[in-house]
Structure formats: C-alpha cells, structure tokens
Length: 253
Ligand SMILES: [Zn+2]
Image 1: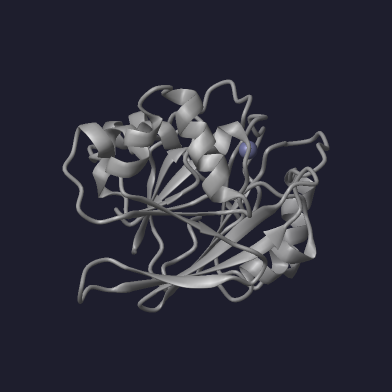
Image 2: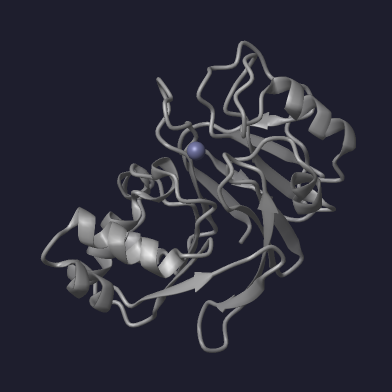
C-alpha cells in the first residue's frame, strides 16, 4: 500500500476530469465512480485486481461503477476470492438494487459469480482485509463526515507503517479532523474553488483544515471548479497520477 493512483479526480459535474476514485496499492478502491473501471484499464490494470472497495456514500459519482466492476468479475475473469464492498448502512440492499437496475435479468448471476460480500459500517466501525492466506493485512476504520444529510463516511487505512485517510465527500467538520488525525497522507475533496456548496469543501475550507490538521500530507481531489492556483501546503491530484505515500514520504513542493 505504498502508492495511490488517482483513477479520477473530478466531482459529479466536472468539466475536464473523470469522476473521483482512488486505487490504493493495486488492491483497494476508494469509491467506485462510473468512470473507474475504464480508468483502471487505462492505468494498465485488470479490474479483478481489486479485492476491496470502500464506498463513502450513495451518490452516483461514487457508486455507479460498481455494476461494471462486478460484471467484469462475473463474466470476464475467474475470481476465487470474494470482493469485499464496505459502505454505509443499507449497503447490501443498495448494492443489489444497483446491479439489478444496471443489468436487469442477470443481476442475481452477477452478484453470485462476482463473489461480492457486503459490509455495512457505522461511525467507528473497523475491520481487516487480508490480501492472501498469509499475506499482509489492511486495517480500516470508518469515520462519519457531513455531506447532504445522508450517512457519509471517510476511511482510515493502515498497512505496515503507512496510515492513510480518505474523506469521501464532506464539508469542513469535526469528523474530518478526527479522520485526518496523525495520518501520513489525507486525500480530501475540494469540490469548489471560491463558491460555497453545502457538504463540500472550497479553498478557504482547505486552508482552515491545513491550519489545524495533524496530517503530514494533504492531497486534493474531487474537483468540480478548476482552481486558479495551488493551495499552499496541499497537493493537487492529477488524472491517473501515481503518488508515493510511504510513511515519511516528502511533501511535494
Ligand atoms: Zn461526489
């Protein structure tokens, strides 16, 4: 888990970026946007490399790639290991409905043959994903954040000595500071540049975050309004950019 690949870095209505999704190492997806499977292939990876998906909330720009990911696992690749999909309360029902709506008539087969296993979280829920029988373990924790009055979560991920956090969509809130506490890298949304949009961050929110956070690196993604400039102290993710996030990796200039 030493690299992040930004498969997409845009918000729901971005002009020039594909929808935001991050690949951690080559096994874990943070959200599963409508464009994420195509972007995985552009990055030279097969969709069946993914072993766990962490969904922040049930908005389309974060989840509508899931039917395509499961379709590939069901019909294109032979998969033996389950795909763990971690998400908000109601995850199993939402996931099954999404697949049935996307591919009526073959939904049940996709769900069975993709070997999907749903995990529903609440604030503070945690768990482990093991890469293979004796392989490394990824430890995760869900942290509640504030977005559009619906259950929304960020995730803290720990593997070896690297601790990461991912905000999903959120406004500036106490949950975000809790999420970012002491991490080697925080991936956080900045949907807006100047304008305010409830449940999202803008550049002033990012500056406030930078003043208080104990995260060692802050990387911005989920960008709808193209920034006029960099935000000092933060890095701006680019499409298909691969970033080294090992513990102690240096802040980019
Ligand atoms: Zn979004």
